[in-house]
Image (cartoon, rainbow, N blue to C red; front, side):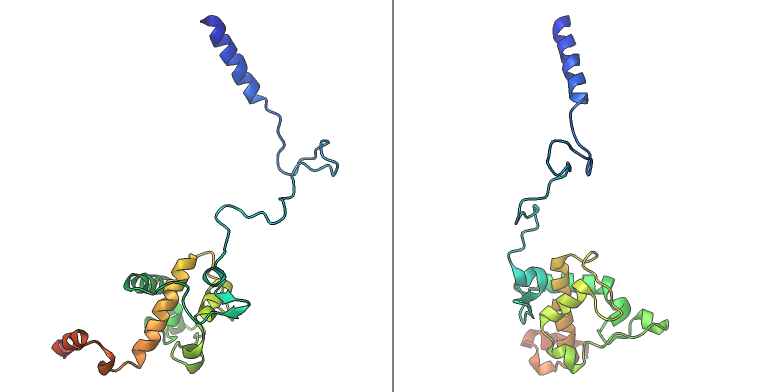
Length: 182
């Protein structure tokens, strides 16, 4: 029993003294003298294989995509509204008119989503702006996850449609609900 325990302790001591290199330590083992090795060509980190170009960049062959890379559902719109209210409304306003709280405090106004240029802009344009920034707007790629950016864009499209919508465009049950409110 004592012998087994002694061997166990000796084994632990050997594990404490493992040969290793810290990052960027020199190494006589490799001909270039570096311990850090260059990754094999075309190596992709786990979780970073972005096969769907439209989903991850908002572009296909360098051009902004015109359509969403996944179906827009009520849940996507609800998430988009929530994220828009958190990240975008402070500048762009709750209705997308470009009159958010920072504008009321003297900062420059962003463009309204109701202008013709942005109403006609492909959805990939909005994804690119959120991802890379544009003008005075900085990149939100490290603050807003990719799927949330797409959800925000869906909500922006809903805001754009809501400003010029007429009651005749609504389904009958929604019209009836509005008539009750009047």
